[in-house]
Length: 189
Image (cartoon, rainbow, N blue to C red; front, side):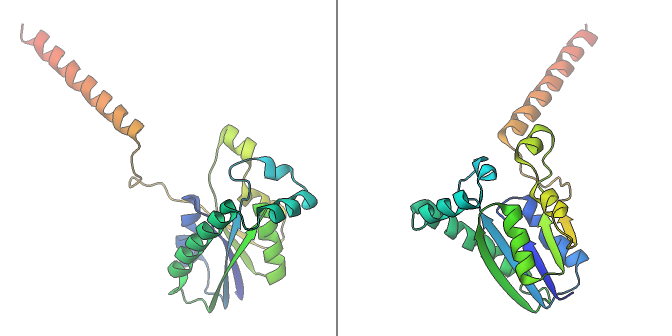
C-alpha cells in the first residue's frame, strides 16, 4: 500500500484508528493525517451550506479568535496522532487541516493525494442522534470507490464513570444494604 489517509478529530471514536492501523494496515510509503475543522461548531447549519456560502464563511472566519482556537485545536490533535504513528514503519507522515464538510473534505484530499485506503473512526451514534447528525464514516463509504476501513472502539470497562454512574451505584448499593437490614430484622424476630 502506497498512501493511506487517516481522518482524525478530537473524539473518542477517532482514537480507535491507531490500533486499527497497527493491526490491519500494511505500512504505507506515505501516511496522511487529516483533521477537518467544523467552522460553525456543533451547529448542523454547515450541512445546509453550499460551496458559495462555505467560501464566504471561511473568508469571514479568517483571523477571528474562533478560527485561531480551531487551528490550535487542530494542531494539538494532529501532533498527538503524528506522535502516535511516528514509530509505525510508515515512510513519510504528512498532516493536513481543512475546513468545511468533513465528508467532502476527506473525499477531496483522498482524490488529490490519490490514496489507496481511507481509515476513519466511527462515532457509533444510534437512533435519533444518527438520524439528525448522520455519520461521516458512512457518508465517506457511500461516496467513494476507494476502500474505507472504519475503526470502532472496543467496549471497555476502563471507561471513566460519570457522576450519574456513581449516584446509580450508590443508590443500588444503599437499597441492597437496607433490604438486607430489613430482612435480618424480620428473620431474627
